[in-house]
Amino acid sequence: MSEDMDFEQKDDVEVKEILDDMNSDVQVKKSKLPIILLALLYGTALYGFVFSIIENNRFGGSATVVVFALFIMIFVVMILQIRGVLSATKIEDIDYCLNTYFLYKYITAPFICGSGGILFYIAFKWISMTINSNHQLVTSILIFLFIAFIVVIVPCILVSYALIGLPCTVAVNCMLDITRKKYGMSFVIRTTHFFLQMIPIVNIIDALYISIKYWKKGMGLAILTVVYSYITMAILAFTYLVIKSFGR
Image 1: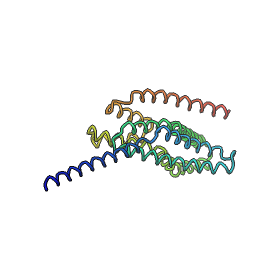
Image 2: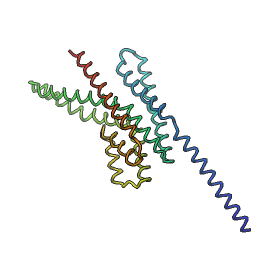
Image 3: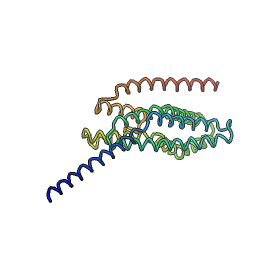
Image 4: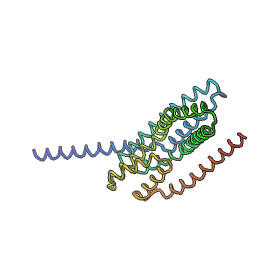
């Protein structure tokens, strides 16, 4: 009788191992969603969305349909990418998390830097007009509009920034969870790294630091980041000069 029970217990253990292997295979397949394809689709939808809004008057009513379709596409790709990262976290696939983070950072960086530059330029011109204004009524109106801009527009911009960078936020959060579990990163250090991700430019440097220090990876990404940063700055500088030349 005991031999029969041992045999049944052994079968139960083997069945459990087989089921665990099957679950692991499913997780691996989920984590292998094509990062590059999803990232390119995300970038196409994001920049196409912006271009469609800018050229809305030229394309007429058809632009509204395109804008709506691209808006939906952004969220669909975002959801698929986040699911892929969460699945990768279950099997501690750090490469998937790192690649997702940096790919999306590179793709969204021109948009974020360009938007930040435009807003900074508008704010600077607004303040200059307020200071140089000789009329009390005009000055009061400019101050009121500037306060309204801070109260209404800035929160919307921050929410948009958080949504656009959501795949990066999820990826770095999962990356920190895996690193903490693997190398015993303290809660304070993990929290510090997470909040550093809220600061533009610093967030990429911090992510490179994590990947190089803990995972001995990222030297190639570091070189690519430097090259990419210089190219982005050159493009932004060229764009500024072109806009300035048209304003003459």
